[in-house]
Image (cartoon, rainbow over all chains, first blue to last red; front, side, top):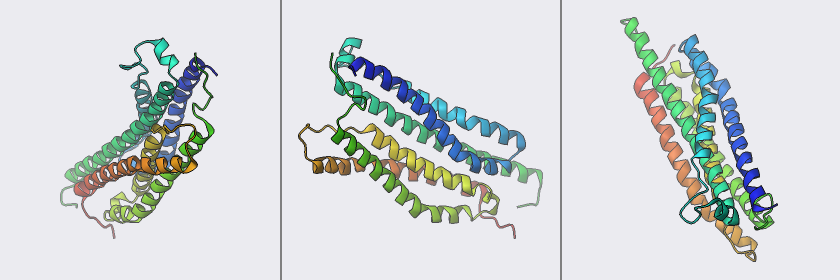
Amino acid sequence: MTNEQYLIVSYFTVAGGGIVAAMITAALLRAGLRRAVAAISRTVCSYLGRLLPAWLVLAALLAFVSVSYIDCAHTTYQSVVESEQHLVATTHKQVGRIFTYLAIGVFTYALALAVLMVVYRWAANAGRPGRP
Amino acid sequence: MGEINWLGMDLMEFLGSALFVGMSVVVAWVVFVLLRGPAQRLLAMNSRLSEARAFFVRTLFVMLLLAAFAVSGGRMFNLPGDAAFMEYVWQAAGNLDGVLRALMLVIGGYAIVILVLLLGLGRYRDE
């Protein structure tokens, strides 16, 4: 395979793989999430359930597009395609960044859910004075 | 224009990368097994969190796994073609520092999530 073919194949494979990784991550968390948010409210439960896959897919796509093939040493398409080492290194960088952003996405989602649970509980307690 | 194989690396580099990914996943799994019990006990301090316990424990597992993949997927093996097998093993072991750093960050982030929950909800027992 030529360097240009490798560039095309790896680019779209990594993009597709990122989306699949995001969907798998969302699927892994989905079962537990449904039970966790059921205690908050039905509307919020439905909203948060739909938000997770979209949030993670966006994180993966953002990570993917944030890696550029163009840098100081490779300023033109021709120079990018000529360098095997650069193509492979950039592909690795894309993969690494996708997983990093997915981890950050899961963390922010869990943190937001934790804050939401606390706020909901405080609001519920404020509505029922005298209850712990 | 140069030629490149579909993996973008030769067989030894591929084996080295696969070994590194495997080592990273094993380290992440060991860390998860060590932390799972304490995390469950912390979440059990408030019985209102019983429904959410599975989600937060699974979140820890997923974050550790993603962090391990993030480092192992992003690292390359830049060794000469005539490098010995053990040189690949050494490089994989050397790259583990990035994995451990990432796992440390995940544990720190997870501690923040648990802290928010327990500070906000406090200790509570239903019975």
